[in-house]
Length: 189
Image (cartoon, rainbow, N blue to C red):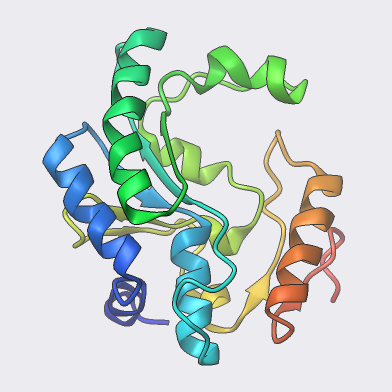
């Protein structure tokens, strides 16, 4: 899949388009719309479904060196009214803080990150390792866009990878998008 085609597809989802405007208004540092809301919109366009079909939430990453709960909570609160207005769940997280809460929530260590895209690098699946910059013009996709275009789901073997979480997520997606080719943890189909 070409980058221009990907951007065109994901912006057909009015929530993604509105979210770009909102995060632009907030002027958050190193800010990206990320993961499933992008990938799944592209899948929906490719398979002829409603653009928001199957999308559980819309994820936004930013990177602010202020590690306080209060700073992140201000951003979350600023997005809450917008989220309510859209009728969509928006999860916005400061990637500079993930190492502070991840071990307690998931029982595994998590390194300090130095930019928002470091969080994208650690996603569970390669097809969701994607971000659209807050200006809507740049894509970050360390694994490329081919898996999205070819409807392939494969694990992203990072130190925090969970085979159980991968199987659960890919089974949910397979039920929603039966066209997907799900790769097993060991690399087979």
